[in-house]
Amino acid sequence: MKGFLYIFFTVISEVVGTAALKETQNFTKPLPICVMSIGYVLSFLFLSLALKITPMSVVYSVSSGLGIVFSCLISRFYFNQSLYYSQILGIVLIFFGVLLSNGTNIHNT
Image (tube, rainbow, N blue to C red):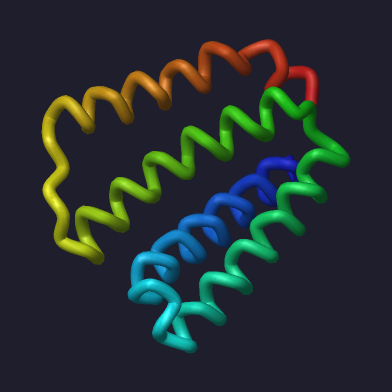
């Protein structure tokens, strides 16, 4: 369970860093640059902690899947970008793909 907590913090840190990257306006805004840098550093820190106790296939697929979901939500609700039905379907398929591909790995952690 601790591994999944690390994965969750990995994803949150990475999504915050990516959202801040968009706000840097080509690296001309100091505050978003700092937020982005801290977000990415924390993301790698939590990723390394997760990899110590959880199989890499689980860490990578779960963090990638959740990262896509959270990035789409941030882009929709924070940046007010459109989210199409095909994208929603893709997110749902990714979610179920992660669950199916890690079903046995999740039970063994």
